[in-house]
Image (cartoon, rainbow, N blue to C red; front, side):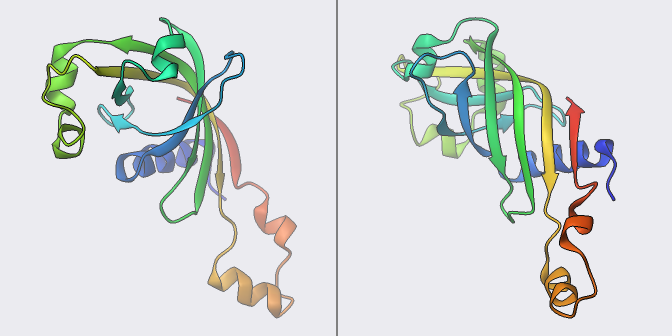
Length: 160
């Protein structure tokens, strides 16, 4: 069984590999989460999203807005609900450091007046690791495992 620290490490590694999430404001009236792609700045964040100034999340967010991100890893073997705070940044050093060809495809350059950058500072997360696999399916079919027991210990709340 993985420890909470191991699940947190797996989550950060997965976010480095594939970080499309559903990001939403926790206290948004009539709001909803929307798919966005995080770019991690370092091994443990913060996490950034390049978007547009007319995105309703940008328009509603203010410094320290409570937010959440729902995440599923590329292999569907790790899930998380990450809680934290967002703010909007215009820090040129961040833009220069994180700029890449994927981001560049959406904008007319680093000074595009329509571009906004959301900073997500993760606070804590609930992380689940998939307890099913081909081997687990075989064991279950043969009556050699208990799926409820196998799932125990595969979830943790971690401080990020």
